[in-house]
Image 1: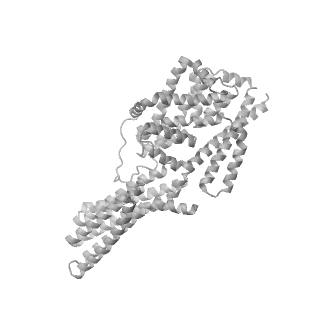
Image 2: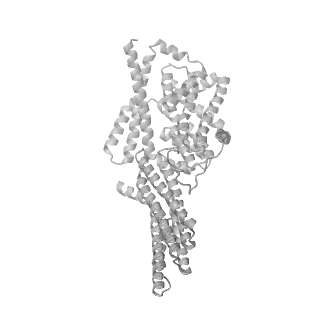
Image 3: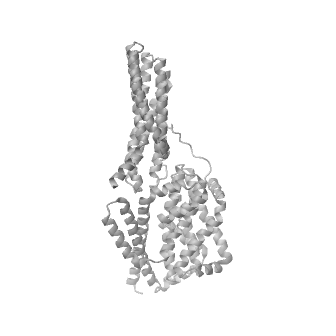
Length: 553
């Protein structure tokens, strides 16, 4: 073979690999945009036990075509406190089975249909105006590109058989440990076990790799695939690191167990897989699936031990960031794992923390208004600075994630989340206004009657309830509180009108001084506006979804 032919072969291999990687990435990202939010909700809902978590992990990874995406999302969930390590273990087990679906698809070699698949995807993208359909079309285009790349690589590998040096080099790979190391390094570099296994599949199809050695390369690919989750966990909390370690230990221990099986009965295992495989490509795909399923069967009963092993490797607890902690973010920011599929969920958790802080500060200010406690007044001002910090930080983060590839459903809610930040910040401002009134009262000696204090307490109790229900609706999608929020909003409006009338009566009877009356009137007006902000928070996401649905219609 001439030098020119060798160069052409290398260029074809590189081009085919580039198309394959791009097609895989485009398909995975597009599916995540279309279905990421729905799959995330399924992941949250059905992971109450390890077995259901495993089933969800298989389905999720099979749809998204990326175990890395699934395990990275699990790491983010654990980091945000939405999933514990035992639930995460089940999903990780399932993701390891789900990732074998890619090699099964590749083994069917749909390359001859790739142009038709590409044309269909392009026509669908050009004809549709809906974002969901466009992203679905992109996923189909990615699927087509994937097989075009596969055909290009396959064609290049056919010419490898005419190069004795390459044939001899691949044939000389007989050391199981070296084969495992090669698979591990290649996957760590490419960051996709599916791609590496597909390359092994193509080499085996051209009889360039011996079938037994393929088993060891596949096991190396499995260990190498842990790199993405490990990297994603580096900036996360300790539980996020433990979740990534569960994935790592599953593959390392699973590989060790498979080594024992192959040392005892390699020939029998190869013969068994060959008996159910039509060709060498199917052999690699089936071997990948059988290895993963076997590992899950062997290790699933010991998943609690894997969790404990991960806890031993990463001992201790994270320093808790309380909701009153000054100038610190807990669920978002540079020190937290970023995953587009869970970014909005983490923002909502941070907003819930900010809302608790604002609500707590409002109660502190109301208490200071009655007791005239200087320490409470000073703390209200200090906490308000923290609320302002959170407001700016969350707003900046929303701007940042709005520019990333979020799932479509999450993109709908970004605008609403900007409004929620503003509404919570305004509740904080009203707490500061009450503190100003408390300070004024202390400095001027203004007296507030017992009756007025009782009325303020009654209204504050109603406002506390509507804030509590609103946060539950917003942060936890608790629609059972919807009617209660609507009713309370009406009652607070009515209460404000009622108290203003009583205030006027006291003024006319001389039972209240103008200075006390002004403070009283301002405070109850402020509480009514707090109720309005709380209602806005409750219906923020629901309103955004309705507007989007109306636009689509």
